[in-house]
Amino acid sequence: MDMYSTVTVESEPYPFEFVPKQCALLIIDMQRDFLEPDGFGAMLGNDVTQLRRTIEPNQKLLKAWRAAGLQVIHTREGHRPDLSDLPLTKKVRGRNKTSIGDVGPMGRILVRGEPGHDIIPELYPLSDEPIIDKPGKGAFYATDLHAILQNRNITKLIVTSVTTEVCVNTTVREANDRGYDCLVLSDCVGSYFPQFQVAALDMIKAQGGIFGWVSQSDKVLTVLELCLHYLLNIHSKKSDYFRISIVCI
Image (cartoon, rainbow, N blue to C red; front, side):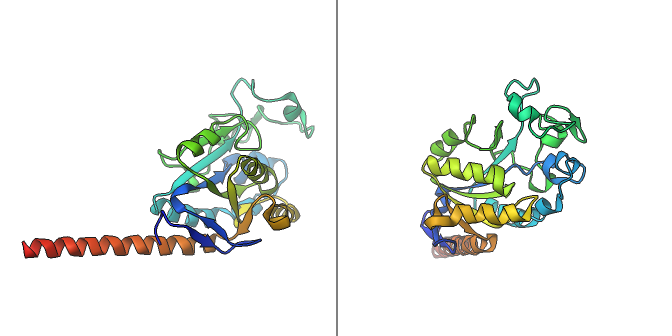
C-alpha cells in the first residue's frame, strides 16, 4: 500500500476509495470571524464552541496529510475591499444592523485582508498550500479551484470544516456536478446548529451517496498510517541495501 495505490476508507453509504496522490484535503472557511469568540459569528449570537470542536480533529488530520506529502487546499469566504463582488441581496439579507463590509470586532466583516477574514492560527496554511478566496458559499463559484484540481490531477476530495449545511454542503454539491467524489468527515465539520449538522450530513449520504460519502477522521488517519508505514519500510530496506553495498565494495 503506497500513495499511488487505491485505498479504502470505511464510510457511509459504502466504502470510499481513493488514490492518495490524486486526492486533496479541502479545508473550508476556518476563519477567525466564524470561529473565534470575538468574531462576527459570535456577534450574531451564535455559539462558536459548536465550530471550535472541529479544530482539534482538523489539526490531527492536517498534520498527517502534510506528513504524507499530499495536497492541501484552504478556502476563505470574503469580498474585495471595494465590495464590487458583493451582491446587494447578500449585503442586506438578515436585516442586521452590522453586515458584510461594515466594521466588526476584527476589522471589516468578510473583507479580504482584514484580521477576521483570515484563517485561524491553529490551521494556518503553509506557503505552498493554495488559498481559494471565494465570494460565495461554494468553493467553485467565481474561483480557480477547478483549474487547480485539474492541473494537479486531483479527482477526489476529502472535505472538512465549516459550516456543514452552508459552505461545506454547497461545495460538495458543486464538486459532485463537476465529477469529483467527496468524502465529508463528520467530526471535522461543524454547524452553529446541531440539528442542521445532522440533516446536512444525512443529505450528503442519502440515496446511495447522492452527493458524496460521510465518515470520521480516525478512519482516514488509519489509512494514512498504513501508507506511511509502508513508505518507511521501503525507505529502510533501501538504506539497508545501500549500506550492504558499501560494505561489499
